[in-house]
Length: 377
Image (cartoon, rainbow, N blue to C red; front, side):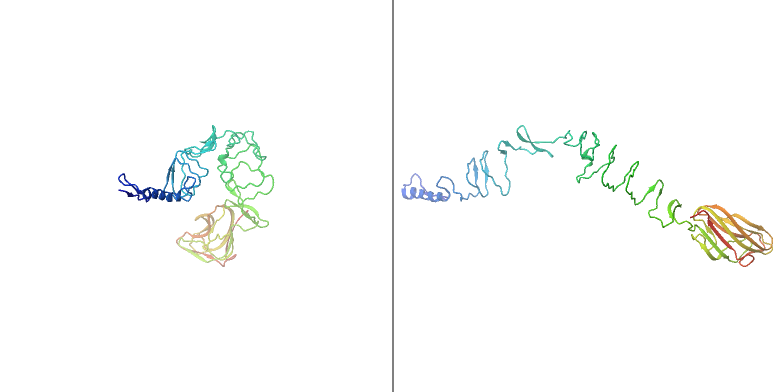
């Protein structure tokens, strides 16, 4: 009993069927011709417009162009042009003209070069001549300004940064030679000697040994002068530590008490060195001249001691008696003093009886206390 072909619409007969040439043979050939006319060209090939859904070709010879998604598996293929618009093209072996490409990738840093008539990956080795790594500069004229190079004097890979500047230099040495043009050093320059043959040397600050030069110029007629371990410009005649106080305050000392005179009027205190208590504190070490005058009224029975204290200890005793009456006490001396020393006048009643008093009206005036540093600018 005959059946119908599901794919080609052909009548398939069995051996027990009577063969109808019209229906079972002619019609079948007619159907095949109709189907092949869509895909088969008159020259015997497949029409270019034929769509193969997922074809797989084995050992084919293809002419024309192939489009769509397909897979070609073949050990040998001949193509005039292969255009891959997406995805990957994988070749087990690629030959181009008279040479072939390596089938495995070289190691990191390897170069594709020609050896033994073919393209191969090789790892580059360090050069030995001056034209390769510049590691041997003997007898090589780099340019007219760098003409003192000797062998092994410099390794270019160690000092040339990717930006083209010099980097990593801990020692830069040349026996002779001259830098031409402007040289700018933003870090620290350490040199045994700097020879300045012309132009102007400009420094934001300049230290010489243990001291520094002033950063700004002084005014007209000032001079360089050392004070407190620094060098600065000062005008000659500028008052140093100096003071003058007058009009002594009245005070009384009884029964072993001590008076430190104070004053009503300040004539001069150039460095604010005298306190309201009448003491002078040395601000700059040096040689000082001290002058003072006071008048003491001694009531009978007092034991009078007067003079100058230095750091709370009697330094000069101007008078010492146990009599009574009015006694003028002039004081004048010159002495070296150290910064921090404290100088003051004093009047002391050392007895249990009687009293002493300071007068601001008796005899030669109301008293004074003056001092100045000698030899100062």
